[in-house]
Image (cartoon, rainbow, N blue to C red):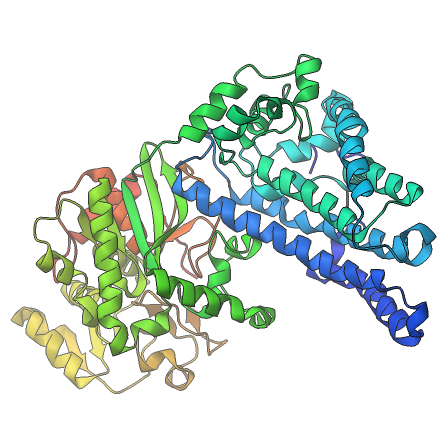
Length: 621
């Protein structure tokens, strides 16, 4: 929102939320009816092109979002700005598709009621030439002066400041404007289209091509990484005045009073508003710089729908905790197609880049879903991918790597011990984060708890939590006899009295691991008001409304940790899993030990270190 919102700031359908697409339904229905009800010689098929073009613009936008986020997370040609993208920007830019809905409405009205727009041919050369001339002249010229006017205090505070709240731009930043401002832009861009109509040179491909060109250049200019090769300007020097670059427009978002042009810097040169550092920033960004992260978090996708929650996927979904959405099933071929492609290429990919003071972090994703990890046939292949990622990080100079979710499974690779056995001279530290996860769980258990029930599969974390509780004099009841005997062998004789075998489900506090208790029927046996505390990296399905469910082990991150604009799986905003935080603390403290296999760091030492660096425990439910 602008600092002092003026008239026509809000979009007409703003309060409709995701239902806003229904405003197009009367036009789509009317177009289908007009085609079906008329005889063949009376039909105007032009109207049938509008909705596919609407879908193409949506797809074009999404491709730019994914491409830009993937490229900027790798940092090679990122335009360096001393700031990051945050959740506030993602929320502000959620309405990026409003202008596409508006263009769809305008298109339907034009074809239905304007005789010029009816029965257009597919292609005309003269219409293309006219469009090029009018865009280069009137459109670019008028936009330049309108843009300068928008930077006057009166208009800037009421309209354009909304757009400039985004210092670090994304492709969709280009179309994040108040309603009134977009109306003026559409009036400017309609000049070549109206001219084609008036001269009888309009064509379907001419209009589609011109609007696609505007979208492409808009998104390119705001993508925040340099992609225009230098040979373009070396071979065609005059293009310097007729085609801008992402670095050119990035300076406008950091300095505000320079580089006002739309797509052609010509008018900035003419009127003296060209930023003198434009060429230098272009060459610096194009040359790129390889940033070596200090910490890498290696994770994987969970369900097929989790694909859409990756940061380079659907921005609005990635900015919220993961939860299945029924409408995402309509796009089921996409994750399957992605799964096939990653299966072919078989390597990790970078999805996020964060900064914590001088510490640089990245998130890498193994191209597999949770169900792959349960297949014995996939075990060697996935372990090979994890090992490849570790060696790649080692060669790049990464200091610490955390193994997230099933990448550290005890049965799968011995909590990461497999990789140390194969490569005992690794300089990179492998961290499974179990010590901090244990600390978070221990500090989550209410002080009044005198007895807890350990249920589900036994793990490294649940074993450590149980042993620590026994040392504190809290009785641990184990629901599985084999797990009871296994734990008993690990306890000193004087503490064994605090460990009991119990088939009762009347305990108020449950420590829940993976396994059968994840299913509804196991939870049904609990008493009303039972506290379910997960020892797993995966959350419990909430089968009871009368019980209390705790989050998986996680901590609130400090404000100094920047460029955080997506949620980690099902966790709330600006909350990270303890397994991931542990690696950050490990690097900050400069600890030299691995934490994988059976080894664990001092739980209290890790807990105090995380608090010292600004990480905070989540408030218990």
